[in-house]
Amino acid sequence: MLPPADVPFSVKVPFEVKADLYKLGSFQGDKPGDSLFWLDTDYAGFTEEKLALLKNHSQHGRCYLSDDLENLETALWNVAQLIADDLPEYFCFADEVLESKLLGLRLAKGGNLAFQPELVAFQGLGERCFEHLQRLEPFDRLCDFLALSVQEDLVIMHKTSDLANRAECLLVSLPSHWDPLDKLGLDFGAIHEPVPDNAPLTKAQGNMLKAMTSKGPFVRYNWSLASTPSISQNPKLLPREPRLLKLKEKDDINTLLDTLHFRVERQTLHSFPDLNRGLFAIRIFQEPLRQTLNNTERKTQLAAAIETMSEGMLSYKGINHYKDLLLDFLKS
Image 1 (cartoon, rainbow, N blue to C red):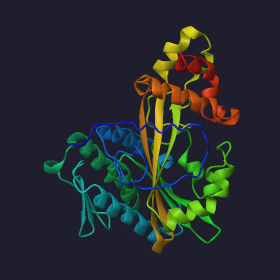
Image 2: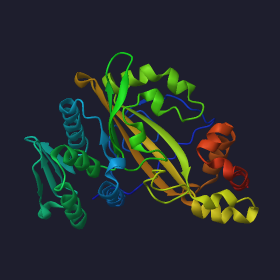
Image 3: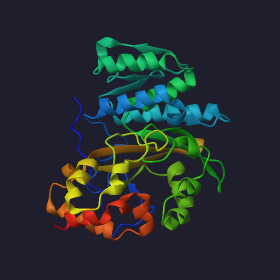
Image 4: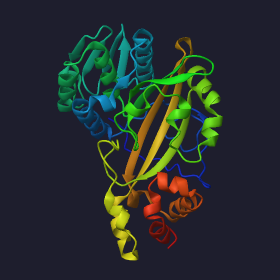
């Protein structure tokens, strides 16, 4: 039913921190074309990880500001409509009810939740999601229903004035070494402050916000190397793999390749101008690095990208611990 998983190779040379946005559908190599959301055969695994985090650490996967819940809820139902429009073979939104054919769940405005086992593609998973959702208050139920419906993490940005914006709602269970709770209420610049060489992002903050809340839709990519197979990499819940700090010798390359995973973020943006809000969706792709480096061209491109990174970026991505060892392999 779902298409096979296919990790996009988004490495560019030279490596640069850029506020680059592409019109959805125009990015070369973007498999789903103009689709905001990207479902594949990894869906069940993603949803299992999201469900586990929301059940055990909900404050890290679902956080929002409560001073304007009415408009925020309207924005979230707009997201529900986008999901149904984007993926009509898997979702239906009609008569103010969102139905997931993957989980067999129906959620109505007002909070009424129903499970339809005869329609479900993943019955056991759908049952567990239903059990979790029915214990929640209506607004939290909507948040988690959306989070569990798609493989993307979902962020609502709110433009509060021409000069001010904030991360109003973060339904983020699968972050790349950041905690959503730390970003709640921050503006675009503050959110990206930890990123080295971030001057282009800071300079483009106004244009990025305008694009996010009044233009688009857009797509952009980011990549990293992960030292754990977990899709969710919240540093407060899953520290980085310490074994990589000791790898120095040539003989350690197999350990390194067995440990590292190639991780890509496909970020899509869609605006809700009438609400001064926008959706920022983050889709994670991840596979063992050995699998990614399946040809010489990719090895050469990854080596060149690493060689053009600043020391600050190498440290930020954790590559500085094994840079020389990895480059020796990539160039061999």
